[in-house]
Image 1 (cartoon, rainbow, N blue to C red):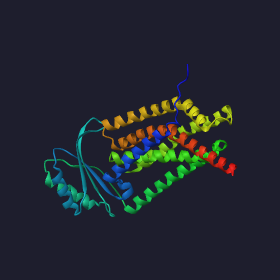
Image 2: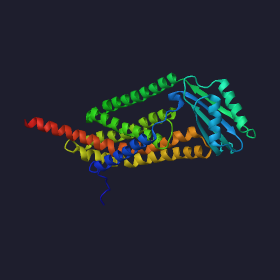
Image 3: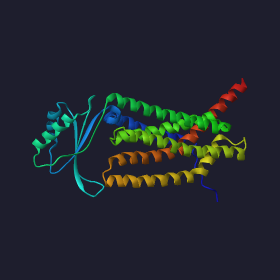
Image 4: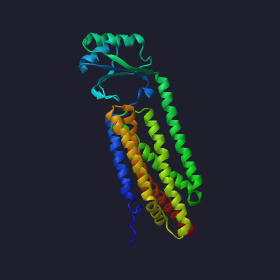
Length: 318
């Protein structure tokens, strides 16, 4: 009985087309909805209240705008269940600015809310502020950390797999990593999550996770080059290697995905937004990381090697 084998290189155009189609959707959503930066990156202030009773969005907007003398963004969320199983109503105020929010501003907000809703009890849950310059510096440092991590990972791949064309393997792994980073970014955009420290944490985690899957494939390619000999084509070499590691890649990704899915469900049930905004993009990143390692990195590596062989053949005929 012939063993089932997937022709990954033969179907490379389908895989590349799927990724390009998703990128197109992500770009369109980005143009429509834009990219929102958290106050950690753009600077500003965030104040969150819990309250009882019922409030009106328009009345609250006007009361807080009168208290601060500037436009603000107010989000009202009713009937959320916290970790203790209690149902709470929350009111979140966010504003941009260089001075943050002072104690006098907080007192003015308290007075305006009490005047507008005397029968409701407003209690401050948290208050934080970040200067814009500090936020932009933090964002720049995070981007440098992501870029440096990507470069070091590529250098490692190029050195470790130098016997099978380490530079081409490293560059194609970088393409796969860039693919995964974009997928995570589009996840934040499509679901309306602000880019914050969770975004950087997810990206750095996926960089290492995705590259690990790619290294497993390249390691098998190097071993099969020794076993199959120099006469074996790169297409046969890579397809054989990916099929041999496919079960391992899927099982590892599936186990990790299920574990993160449990974390996401718990965060969703108990209204832990900091958990859900990490877990959901992480789940998407795990899927795309496995996909890019299996369906993109290997076929792209074969395309590079075939191109080099054609150039060498043309040079020898001259």
